[in-house]
Picture: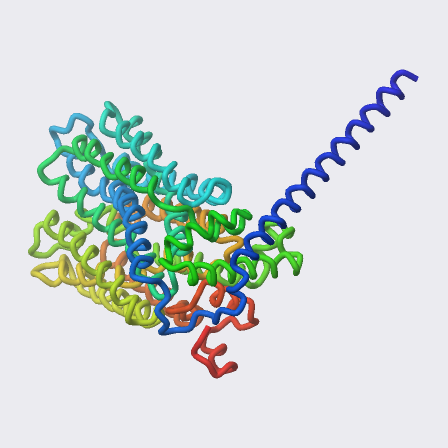
Amino acid sequence: MKCDGAHEAMLGNDKLAKIAKQKQKESNKQDEYEALQSFLRSISSTATLPPYVKGETYSSVRGVFNQCLITCAVLILAAGAGHPIGFSAIALPQLQRENSSMRTDDEMGSWIASIHSAATPLGSMVSGPVMEAIGRRRTLQSCTVPLVVGWIIIGTASHHALLLLGRIVCGFAVGLMAAPSQVYLGEISEPRLRGLLIGTPFVAYSLGVLYVYTLGGPLSWRSVAYLSTVLPILAFIALCFSPESPTWLARRGRFHEAMAAMSRLRGTTETAQRELHELISCREKEKARGEENIKFFATVIRSPVLKPLILINTFNLLQILSGSYVVIFYAIKIVEEAGGSLPPEMAANASALVRLAVTILACILLLRLTRRTLVMISGIGTSVCTLALAALLAQGPGTGIAPPVLILAYVGFNTLGFFVLPGLMIGELLPTKVRGLCGGYIFCFFNSFLFGFTKLYPAMMKNIGIAAVFGFFGISAALATILLFLLLPETKGKSLLQIEQYYQKPNILWLSRKKTTGSQNV
């Protein structure tokens, strides 16, 4: 009898706990509803505002200045993310010298180059839930800590295990920042400037690689590691003065904070009210359709999310196979294998300069050219250069100026669209509801595959030779070009809501969509 009574008491307590939990949930919903109503009353006049149209002056000069200033804080961090990428290219030649204090063979060298990419997926996997929980800006700030710690471990490393540990920690930090930086810039920028602002981190990234290449000439790899802590520290300080993403704030029911952030980013209250009103209206429509309670996996397998996910992941895979990052990791060794009259170190530094210059050019062209035009030029140019280099090297060891010129042309064309596009696609194509989580998982897949390909590259070079490797790069670039021609929608000048609405339509091929609708617009 006592057991039965205790059992009933436990059941009663469980029932009371469930009732209390339900009441708390209803109370939270009521608080959010009241906050929404209060906010909507304060901007009630925006219901009659016209929607944004192409060619309209969207933000004031002050708003544009604020968007650019906040982007600069992200750029400092992006430059810091480029340091670990370029580090192996300057460290390996020093570590493999006869008089090195930490003698390194080819096998260990491949681990030092690739282990960074093995750790990056871990950071990418964590970044999605973290940026949804604490916000985009705070996630970017949090990643500076492991980045600084990783460089200190590398600088003080006395044996290979510590060097690899430092590379792992840096790789985790770079993975943690990759998706939030693209999502954050996509959400703070207006349609007119979004391509430019999302593309600029790749300029900073290239600057970060060039910075390491430049320091690696006169300085030891340990000194380079210590100097690489400067930018992450500066980035943390700069982000303290940046606002949180208004999109994230609005989806959390923090409407007045979202309004303050949006007003700062757009420069005028009227424009901020209109854009925020559209965000809230979209969110309320999701609620009305019952989409807010759908689980993450069930949301991902729905057509409007699955179509951009498949496109982004397939392109990322082909982009890696086209050699975009392998050429950064193994710059000096690749130039040595290809031959030619330029010294390998000079050619590697020239490739970093070309990457930087073309990234700047790409950001400017994103204001003038359509996304599709830019990636078609990039894909065709990359394919032609790599296949021409493969044909040249198939005749024998490279001589003269032709091999380094073709390598530099390949780097230039590849950077023009292929290097910039993945981050742009994450910031533009993914629906608002899953942008944070899916962005992290996309970078996780990207970096997992990048690790495998980077680790495999020395074996590929040894077994099939440099000519076949560049032939493989060329075929991969051609397949990526075909994929983008068929599936990539044109997003220049479109709001994130317009792009989201495009993927809610039944079309898959971009060309067939234009034929059926008779319109060039998303």
